Amino acid sequence: MLSSDSMQRNSNIQPDPVFKTQSKQVHISATKRALDDCREALKLWRLGFLLGWLDIKLRYRGSALGPFWLTITSAMMVGSMGILYGRLFGQDLRSYLPFLALSLTCWQAGIASMIHESCNCFLEADSMIRSSRLPFMLQAIRTVVRNAIVFGHNIIVPIVVFLIYGVWPGLTALWAIPGLLLWVVLGGACCMLLGVVCARFRDVPPIVGALLQVIFYITPVIWMPAQLQGKAHWLLFNPFYALLEIVRAPLLGETPSLDVWLISLGVGLVFCVMAAAVFVRTRARLVFWI
Image 1 (cartoon, one colour):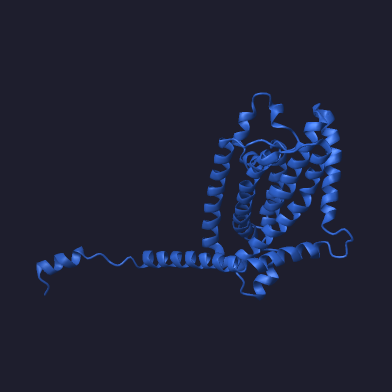
Image 2 (image 1 turned 180 degrees about the vertical axis):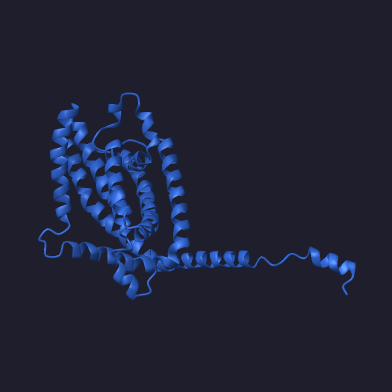
């Protein structure tokens, strides 16, 4: 028989938290594999650049002008919309056209295009993902590079408009470099978050497209913040305005305010944390969803 002391000692012994320990180990393992995925993708950055460039070449295969069709399309849109909205809003074309040309390029070829293509980041690469053991993050690098090339083609249009109207931002334009770097980081995070969500739920890409249309009209892209007549401070509640302004303002010769930078960095931090959490949790199931 057990003594009273032994019984008391046994009653104080707690059972091992088997399920809790296993769950923690599984989470650590998933985090490690996600980090390994990112590390391996960064080692293959040359392949990511090559895939992004090949996507552009295949998209315009057989075309005489190739990617420069994007530049021509953008120029036509800036010319037509600039004259129309300039008259409607009663704006001076000398200040409005450079603003519109740069805003449309930053929005369409920068923010909106990156968000839209992030939705199909993994879906469009389904054959490659199934046939090879390449890291998932490589597809994010590929998408970011592809959009960077498109942005590089389209930025020619505002440069030409600047030359026509004699707009020169000076050294202030260098402030756009950290803004562009933040866009690159956010583009990768966008692929990890929206790419996974859209692979699981196929109704999300049309929803994202519809929301982008709404955001386009409530963000000062075709209209200028000064038109709000003293109510421009309400724009700080629109995170897309801050993200747009950190690149657009320096290229127009203006220094972005501290509030704009703080909002952009805050949005970037929250978005990156969300993307990392979703990617870690769903990475192992992603191949079954595409």
